[in-house]
Image: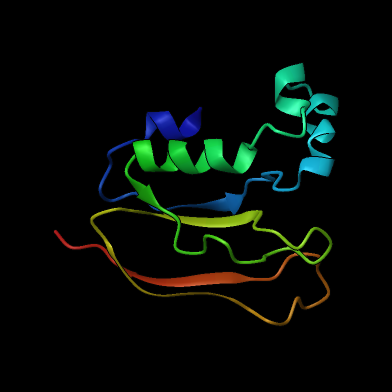
Length: 112
């Protein structure tokens, strides 16, 4: 996983659309996209696994629990900050500007 390659880097910010499936009823999409059968069962939590991977790599998800996509109403868009940084603000815009994703933004201070 890419996050393992940049783990423990105290100056890296990672942002993007991670397409993490939060809803058990949609877990079978993992299998359709090439994941193992285990990753497609309703009790498999892709969100929990990814949040644990973020934490192991010393990243903080300041938008955790926020809804960043209109259709699924979950967090697919992320801004991951190094745990030693200070997040002054992190938010999701209320206007999607014609997209199915809401813009995400954060003010971050990385010292050192």
